[in-house]
Length: 354
Image (cartoon, rainbow, N blue to C red; front, side, top):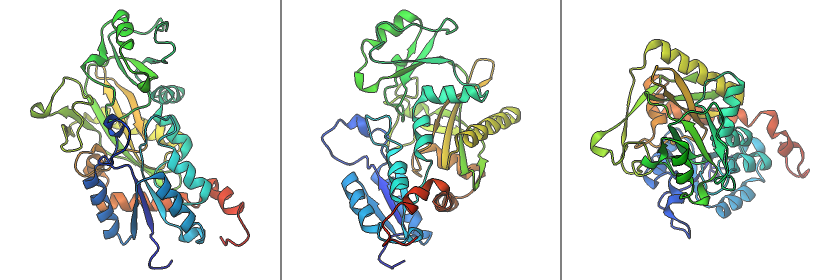
């Protein structure tokens, strides 16, 4: 590859980006300081890095580098979150696969399943993985939905397709169906569908998984999430608490051995069955009896060294920070040789060489 050509294109949604949309749409976007640190780590690994921050710029780069041999094309480092689309986390892997560029993170199918918390619940149930009981409520059905007979209150109400605690606050805990119906009338259409889950009152854990079907999978030790009292602004981990400036939660690695093994085994089962690739964060919560239930799986977990839990869990048991990013790239390049890229490699102008 020519010296002037990057080996990695970092596509990042920067929290500081100014556009004609509400700031709330940027809740999941990485801070510029975090992206700068990630870029520095990639450079230290010997990569040549370019930062791309808009779809138009990415299109220009793909067009420019599509004339390269497939093995010489840069890896697209997926730090996109987007907004207002159920496909938002799958846009980068879909575009990368179509145009023949390796990319970090899981493929479009897995990304779409994981972004929809209700669909994740259905998938987990099919594998026998315990998930919090719940049901989805669309904007159109918010007035006339029917609660499942086996559903028990109190419940926790959250957007089915958002992350970073967007749309979550103290009003998310609802004690009966009347409260739920009343609450739904006050919520903006943009965050629907919502997911109503039975409220679990026990400890909450997060766990990191790294790997792919070709690379193999490893699970970290689970960290128990505790909100710091001096940074707590509400009793739930909501969008008022979430910050790009400071980490409001602490992770404590004191999970009982039997529960830790269960969380690791079940997390690995879900990742293997879904065919995830690269970094994955899974969130679990226990009931009052101490039994854990899956809350969600995130295939574009935050990688910030300043406020993200994934790197903390990874460093606790899987490796140092540089190893984390080295593995992400190694898995991406290995995945780029998989059959799902054959279409872009074989259906091409004859002037291009493999």
